Amino acid sequence: MADPDTQDRELFGALAAGGKRAEQALKRLYDSYARRLLGLLRSKGYTMDEAEEIVHESFLKLFRSSAKLAEVDSPKAYLYRVVMN
Image (cartoon, rainbow, N blue to C red; front, side, top):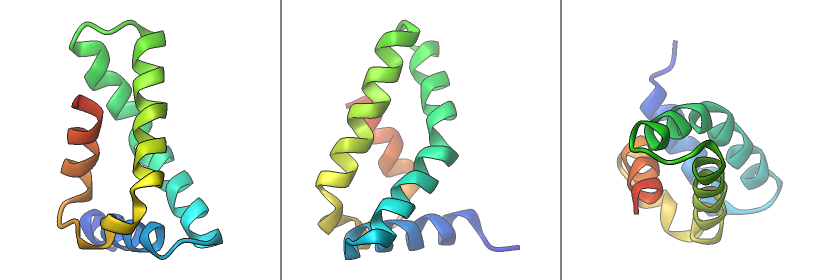
């Protein structure tokens, strides 16, 4: 079984490379993390609507800044930081 951190780094690398693989990588990351990120935001007092908007905006930001992602050491920490900022 592959290490989740390694898989996430590969997905970030695919995002950085662009193209069709980037879209697929973004979808896989969203499917893996959206529920947890929503839970984090809800635990911080955000409504479900606010939390959903923040998560969606965070993934859009991730996609827009994808060129930088190949060098991210901890994708999970990076995602949580983007959502909390």
